[in-house]
Image (tube, rainbow, N blue to C red; front, side, top):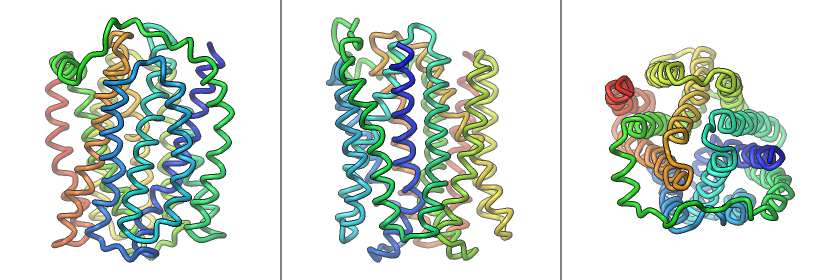
Length: 384
């Protein structure tokens, strides 16, 4: 069983490398190679998460848990192919279509890794989730380091191809897990519908708090991954490798925070850290729109790794520990959709703002909705 959990977490490392390594380069690639406009960037980036929402709904509410290993292997293949397809997309429309394919692969493997970790361990999943998140954080940290090295020596297209090759290293782990599919039995007598699961979980304050907190962070993450790279290049003259280096620093902080959660996961601690991390991240987003010094700008961006490291795993732990094991796939599906929705709405709203204001003001404006949500989370989580 421990081997399965470790292999599942290793796959989490590789899908994190695949997604995070190319994320800060996507908007630069679209602007440089496909002549995309700044307004188009938000919609292109959102296509990934629209596909993610749809695929999660299909998998979470129509597919049984025992098929998760097989789905994980299939989605991993899509993750491997997507960086290659970006290179040969040819135009903005083709690029957006690849975003949809990549989004489907990311959604399924993201959902399967989390659910596998929670249903194989037992009732208390704090440790297994923290291990998965730590492995994922390692991948997130290695990803921008690799892309920094690659973009220093090669162009963005070659970097995408190299990331695809690296992702192939996870295939043996996935094939091994597929052979163990008999472990993923279903206790549920029937699948819950989207309406049933929504009515059931959204009545619970622990679920609403987790969903809203992750949604608020996703609004921020979607905005910064779309517009920080071009803003850093245009306003501070950062090269591609310097931009990816900022993401490397961000995810270094992510590793440290997730290691803390392996040792500290009592409920009161998690609630306090969740609220503090979210308002801290919102404050950093505002500062990014104000700061004029390039070094201070990069350092402020790096500190977002603290929120990135805490918010998702804490919210995931609260959802996992409070949902029944037989319906954990459905609960995780609904919870993870919050991240997709934030990454759809965040870039789209930013795209609307960028048509009539400079990018630094867009960053400041992108903090308004997360702040309102933070207030709602405070009211909800304090009564848990």
